[in-house]
Amino acid sequence: MKGFFLPLLLLKFFFINILYSQIPNIENRDKKKIKDGILNSYYRSMNKWDISFQDLLENKSGAACIEWPLMTKAFLSKGIFDALGYSQNIPNKKASEIAAISGCNKMKDYYQLEGKCECEVIVLNDENKVILPIKEINIDNDFNEAIKFFKEQDYINALKFFKKLSELGHAKSQFNLSLMNLKGLGITQNFSRAYFWALASKLYGEKKSALIIRQSRYKISKEEKSELENELKEYLENISEIGNTHGFLPLAKWYITVPKKPDYINSYKWLSIATAFNLKNAKEARDKISTYVKKESLTSIQEEAKDSYEMIKKNIQSKIELDGE
Image (cartoon, rainbow, N blue to C red; front, side, top):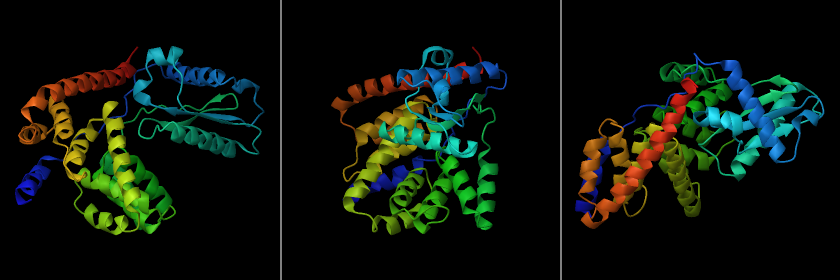
């Protein structure tokens, strides 16, 4: 057993928090054309369900789960949103928007789209409400803003910032998000989400997360703990496959630290992909892990890594398409 754990202790130093996925820069594009394209895609998606949004009663809103990297010219002309929501005949406009978002989130959950897209308001009555993600997120500024809200006990706004940054792979925000779920600050107490985000934070490199992991795991069943661990793996796979490179190393680390028996093959696969993208320290970790992969398995896993790498490159290319059509 001692010989088994020693390489794991050494390997953890190779896994670090790396580049954050950038929100597409669309400053120089025809913004009206993009917004109109998204609105028309929403109408087209509604029509697929035999619902004409234009025929709904006033104080009506529409929402869709938008995966911005896929908002290419082809999608805007023919694409269909996977999750939608709408409302009609609501007393006020704000409530109408909230109802539409709620419906979209239910459909998002049903189709298991967590980590792939976010529900956003598309239209209110006849007004295009699409908000384009023009500005890149400033991680440090947003984190400091979240800390400021937290110290002022404005937990709802603090939670909003921490959640956004957590989804971008910011380990300290993930830790704070898990803490707020554990304590029930700005949100009802949720030990499951506390464990989920604490484990994510640990994989992204935050050492303090171990304390919350210990506290929260004793408040959930063994079955739920296992389900949450697999949910996190699937989440990291989803964000990685669509081109969010910050998920590669935590996912590789998941495979050798979370299962009872380390999965060196899949860890090697994701480290190979991370190395191909030239992520810091990935090569050293890949070479170390490769010594634990059987020689007869290397060729097949390298082919699988190559296919995944090519797919991810294509998904990242779709982000570049957002800079010009």
